[in-house]
Structure formats: structure tokens, C-alpha cells
Image (tube, rainbow, N blue to C red; front, side, top):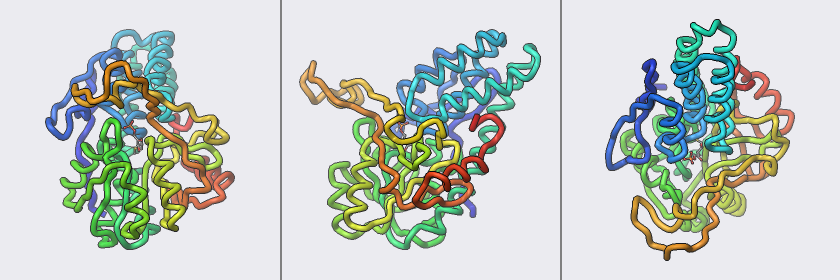
Length: 347
Ligand code: MRU
């Protein structure tokens, strides 16, 4: 497979460089992040986002903190702080914890260097896992056009992506002709980021309002739905960008397969079912306007969960870097996650 990933994040001690996703697609500007404060701001405002990429950012938080004070107390505090900025993507906190564990194993004076080395190795591993995941995914994707939600490409992982990596591989293999993309209100990751990535990859993309997705599925033009995941409970219940649940319900109603693509590091054995997954709620202002423009009256209340949980029973298969798991998930997912456990990140 000849999939190439764009560069969206670079570790250059003592600076973390990231492509500012809040400005895309209008402007391609790199941010130089030099402190934990700058990093937490970038994560909170979605300049960097996407579950696997957040894992790398969690680890980078420890590296940035180690430049100031590599003592154990400070590093523990930094890992906790960065891991708490967004609660749903399990890898933000587990990436920070993994880096912390690695650096605490070396003498204090060697910790900052060890942390940056850890980050570089983590990115390499991520890239390799994305490619393996895409290979497994392409084998199960039916021929025909595909619908996806949010952004799960290079921007979200640092590699070729999860669901978008599968889509790219399937396009390259001649299995799909076009990709339908939901706009993904309220922060428009689909409209701004996924379309940008698909166009750069030469894949015909069709953008639709979130509210049109059920009608699209009922029209019969879509052969499969594929999304990413922020956290997968042991029983297969999956948290992903809000709107995913509606897609899964509509897909089940019309008999279209609904796939989740995520590395095994997204599975959280600490959550028995979806009800235990913490869901991030964001500011009401995000619903009432965008990019400095408001369209709802000031002071209006809003219900703005960033994620929802799709029951495992609605998921046709979970595509990972180690293979595809089909329901019933429980023990099958546990066996795969155990195999995928790698130093630190699965803790
Ligand atoms: O709020 P975001 O943009 O970080 O949400 C991202 C998603 O929901 C993605 O689908 C998920 O993180 C998987 S990314 C490979």
C-alpha cells in the first residue's frame, strides 16, 4: 500500500510543532508550542484534535513539563493536567501516563530527552498501526460508496488515519468511487478537515449537512458507513463524535454495515459499557455561532455534547491494527486489546 501521511505534528525538542486545525482549510499555519499552558490551550480549542493525535499530545505535555522541572511531582502533575483537558478520548490521558512511566524510569537529568524520544517512538508506532489498520479495513469494506463522519485522517492521528485511512486504501484498491462526508456540526471537522484531506488525496468527496445523513442512507447510494472512535468500552459500546449514534441507527434500519475503525489503544478495559464513558460537554456558544459569527440570540441555552455512544450491537465490526472484531465483542475485544498492549500506552 502506498498511502502517504501528511505531516501534522513534529517533535523538535524543546518545541512541539502542530498544524493549527482551527484555521483549516482557510490557512495552513504551524503553531510552535513551548509550554504546558500553550498545549492545554491548543487541545481545548481543538487546534489539535482527534483521539490518536491527542495521545501524542498527552505525551508531549510531559516532555514540555520536563524541560522546566523533571522532578517526579511536577511530571505527575503535568500528566494529570494535560490528560484532563478533554475527558472522552482515552488516549489523551493514557498517552500522558505512558510517557510519564517511561521517563520516571530514568534519572532526573535524562528525563527531558527520554520524554522527547518517547514521543518520536510513539509517532512512528502510530504511523505503522494506521497502515496495518487500513489493510485490515479494506478487506472487509463492501464495494460501493462510503459515508463517514467527523475527521479521522492524518489530521486526527499523525499517520494515514483510521476510518479515513481505510477509505483511502479502499479507493486505491478501486473498491469505492466517492466518499460522502457529514459536515459535523458544530465545529465542522467534516466540512473543514475531511474534505480538505480527501481532495488532497484525489478522492471525490460529497459534503452533506448532518441532518441529511439518514435520508442519504435511506436513498440506497451508500454501501457502508465507517467512523473512528474516541473510547471503546469492553463490551464494544463506542464513543465518537456526536452524530455517530444517529448514523448507526439509520444504517441498521436500512441494513447498511456500520464499521468503527480505531487502534486497540482506544479500547478502555476500565469501562465495562458505554454508560461509563465520560462525555465532554462544550460551550453553548459553539452551537449558536461559528468563527466569530453568531446566528442564535445571545444567552440562549444549548445542549452541546461533543460525543455520543453507539451501542456495540449496532456496530458491524471494529477494525483495528491487529484485525477486525465482530460481535459479540466482550471476550474477542479483550483478547485483541491484550495482544495490542504495548509498553505504556495501554497501561
Ligand atoms: O472533537 P474531535 O474533533 O477531537 O473529535 C474527533 C472524533 O470524534 C474522531 O472521530 C475520533 O477522535 C477518531 S479520530 C481517528
